[in-house]
Length: 171
Image (cartoon, rainbow, N blue to C red; front, side, top):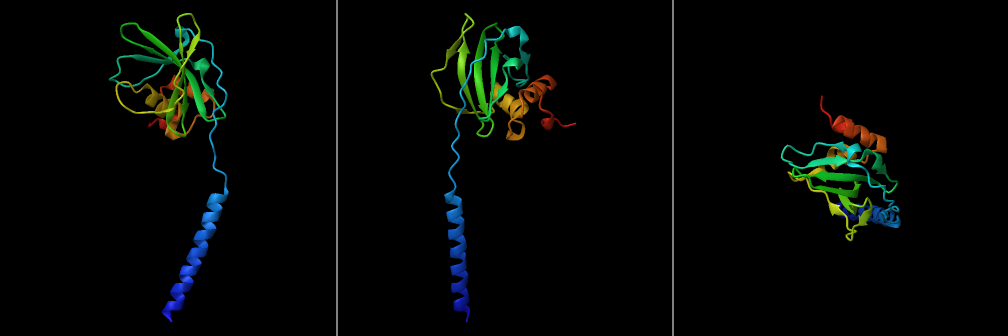
């Protein structure tokens, strides 16, 4: 008596498994495509917004609020300025993908006010290591709170003004 029930159960499980497999594989995989990237004008350092990276960071990190965009491709784009204690400056135009926790440098600013496009088009994982954790700070505290992309550039600018995204604040 028990043997037929086991066979019926096995048969039903195999039917359920094949139904799941066919529905799971019938859908087209979603392939991410990056939108066309438009370089902003190279901003003046005076209009940039400083943000906190870590107590161990000796460099100063700033973002140009006017350059922040939130693309339909899920990329937050912005201009980042890094200033060393000795006065050296490095300005880059970058993108951050919240869904994959990656960042990319599109270009570096030249002294003549133009952009020098990056030769490296690869996206790199964002690592949260001190003291040089500016990308992790932007990801966690400003542009991708909880791993979710901000909805608008104004939301990102507001987070920069407040020292962090409101969803990350503990009161």
